[in-house]
Image 1 (cartoon, rainbow, N blue to C red):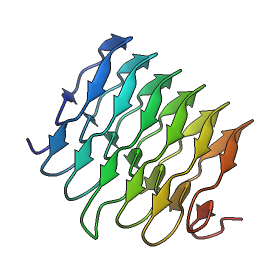
Image 2: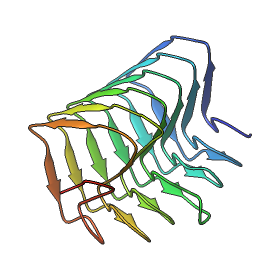
Image 3: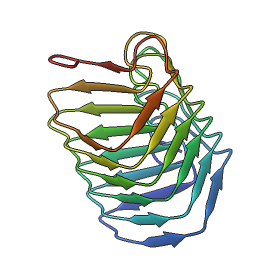
Length: 170
């Protein structure tokens, strides 16, 4: 599929509770889940071992969306291709709310191993553990471009090549 190998939300606001979105592939973005102008709620879901082949969001991709990820495990997802941003979560013009989640073992062949924020995305990330993610270029944990993420009480540990990357990042 071209968007959302497992789940595709287009102008939709579903509640997904205790779901397993595992082992899916998208030819474009959102290997596990793609949101387009949507606000889904994912509560205690496992988003594992998904692949996005071109744009990114191996686990989850958001385009002009405001999803909520609550107590989710987003691990071992891959964004391939040199344009593949955000192994775990890719945001473009989106404002996701992410709380009490784990991002681990995700990989991007470009930027943002765990999370990539672009085009005025403003994610809020609270009480999350972001560990052992990798990006081929920048931001093993988080890569932001023209975005303003808010991280509160998060643990960023052992991500490569750097924890956080982007214009103005520190």
